[in-house]
Image (cartoon, rainbow, N blue to C red; front, side, top):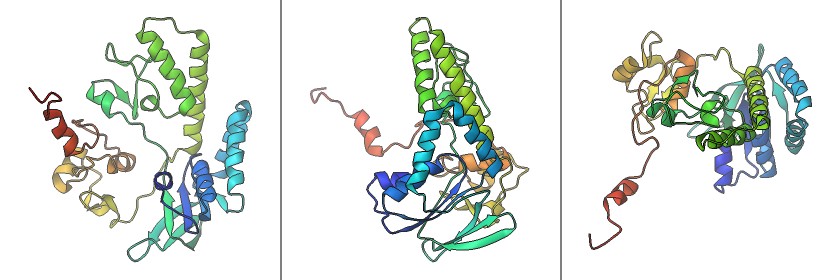
Length: 294
């Protein structure tokens, strides 16, 4: 979200910004903020220091990635970067003014103008699920040629598991070659397997195994203003929708769905078109003929 603000031209120069979350994506975001002139108050990675160090050591076999991480860190070298630290809550009047952080038993407050918090990436599997492809543990299941469970459908990149652009490109090349009935070079298969092994190490190092429940008054579904306290963990997702309208708003669960799955294990029970929010003007244009005589 913070990166989107920057790319859209929002000026964050001089703004007090705090980042919190888990995973290596914190590094490029922090670097981009620093280069944009933001005042980084703290970068808090909830991952334990021992996990980060083990993962960093594994990058000795991937020197380009290690060097890239060091360059990102150098961009905000003067900012506190704390491992094993997470954001507890944020407060303000009309907008965020302060955030409370915790590390072990210690808690403290930071004055901020912007708080960016995230917990990793979630593969987008809506199109594959709509096509009837098998999805397991949040990712589309594919074989060694990127074939899905549906004949004639291949899948590559993020939906098969988040692993970075290099892995996505290799998977896409394998899928394209197989779809065209061309042989797949063994070098491509080895590159794909190495990329997947790296993705597994990445996930193991930065996975949040037991997320803490936020206070009952915390809004889980922003579209329908549903607080966490209105939900019963014993329900199914369908029951939660019927009783509270959670996930029934304009975004159709695209924002709260990942949180509900992480907190309660509620997986999406259906996929409907349009798969992404579509302006009415775009739908109306389909009814208009390009030929004025018809």
